[in-house]
Image 1 (tube, helix red, strand yellow):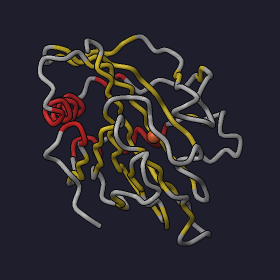
Image 2 (cartoon, helix red, strand yellow):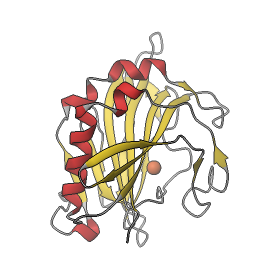
Image 3 (spheres, rainbow, N blue to C red):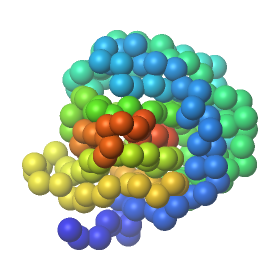
Length: 216
Ligand SMILES: [Fe+2]
């Protein structure tokens, strides 16, 4: 598997080493609420929307989450309501630093960004991406591991529209380890997870954040 490309912002795909600041919030993932749209009951989550402009990160009013059907064939085309992410998380310097790093990495200057933040827990057995190989419908997407406990599987595949062969694969397992990709150019999916030891709790906690440019 070739190394991720980081030189061309239009085809940005980066694999980042652990960011301990965000992963330190792993206790927030103990308080997620069930995702009623996944009827099998293995997914819980929280959601928030923020704005980043002129170096300032600020929350926006919570709104239903909407994706185009073309981007998400399973859940697109309808408005979904999710519980909010805690103010402590949204106001943390760690989150601000992470957003600043993402903005810098895009090499897009002086833009206004709309950010959608998702805290996810997938209980094993479960499917991190029941919608399959998909695009989030944003400009850029971050997929960060928070905590993986007693889990097998969970390999993330990233590829383009043009080929069924993945451009890059990675199994995120270190807290704070992340993939950052151009969502306009790449699609992604993560393989189902199972418990290593079915006698004990098994789950995969992730933080997903999408960036949509507002002033282009
Ligand atoms: Fe996604």
